Length: 150
Image (tube, rainbow, N blue to C red; front, side, top):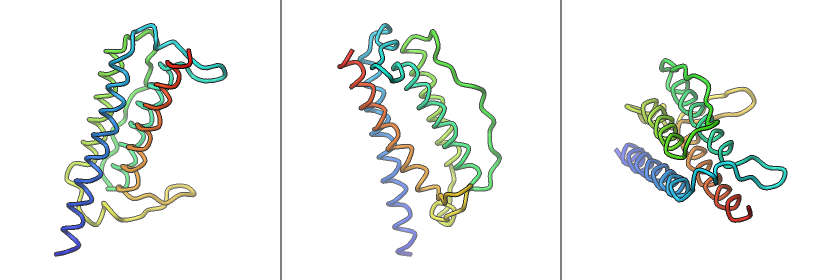
């Protein structure tokens, strides 16, 4: 029984981290003017490409969670933020998050913690979700730094 309580607490905790990290990224994007999307630091990606990368990565996280759960992996088309307004990019961020949460829906305790080898790494559903939250935090900070420096 204690293990199941830990599972529910861990699941709730990581969902909270995902929500908080995404809220930070979304508020960062909402503060941008469409012209800010093309700002870049010398030698780095423009904001638009950073956000495209976040969306692409989250789609990969969703596919990895589905694979780890031995569920069908939804095929997502290519992602492009080229020429899109900030509001359209926010819609794509919402769509990629929905895909991740859908892949997670109904996860059981065993699959949540089970480590499985993928290439040269091992992942659990929990570790993938931790990576997704960290990824949003990293790129929210990167986006703010790009705009501040430009």
